[in-house]
Length: 394
Image (tube, rainbow, N blue to C red; front, side, top):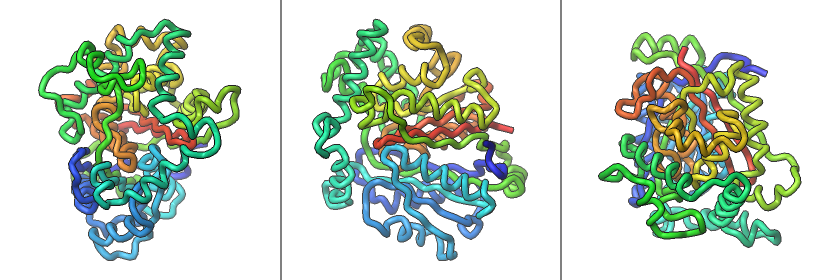
């Protein structure tokens, strides 16, 4: 089912993701102002604000909103684990699509773990982690162990090598080098050998294969067509339409207990992406770039197949051919992904929207995907949920 009214991304903004203990208030304000400046609007144009954050108190979002202005705008807090930012964006999209507002803002922010430990929200951070400590198998294994099990199982079933995982991670580190907002800014081209030689954390994954965890902020503003056309005429941005917004939670599948604590069973991504393709009238062959939840490289590898980019068991070939690098057939994680750009939780899904928007506008600079017109942003949330958005330049 298509969205009731057309929805367009009119402004995006970021604050760099970093392990430095930067105040959340500064990061959120910076990202929000950058997005409003990108759209050429003031806060009084915004008709609804959805704050996505996983750490902090109940009133943090509405308090920070006051820095933008006291306009009476409705403010809501959205939380959905790693999919928090994606969920906030979806709520903004649905607000406009349903005719409840002409313009809505999604703002994601979270502090670095160091900032939380120093008093910036450690209590709620511990509460968030408590979901993994229930009387079940999910409470005995940390996320890194689940991803390691996935990776070893893939090696056994499909013959995937540790070198393939290392090549995916190196690609994302190198994409991050081109993103000024990324957490990991290597001073040289990263090789697969470097990735393999880094500290082992959960075989076959090394520390350079793991998502970077810092703090940051990201923002996206959506609007109806009339306002989007005004922004286009004033700012010169191409129209970027949200052609699909889909969200699903997991269904029971055999064995899902051991695969579902972190990102859900594989079928969750397959079914959500199929719904997104049907809603947009597009297919995998129409995508020019893709963002995924790549906490470890085994995830990205599996999503090549689950999203229909290639057939089952053919993801390794894409890596070997360089197809998912910038300049390849279907670039993935063009801003560095969770591995390179970083995974601050609240802003993560919105960082994907930021990069997808500037890519399809043709404004991504040195990491620009040539001829990009259509991009997908896929995000998983512990619990488990899958959220997929497809954006397209009109």
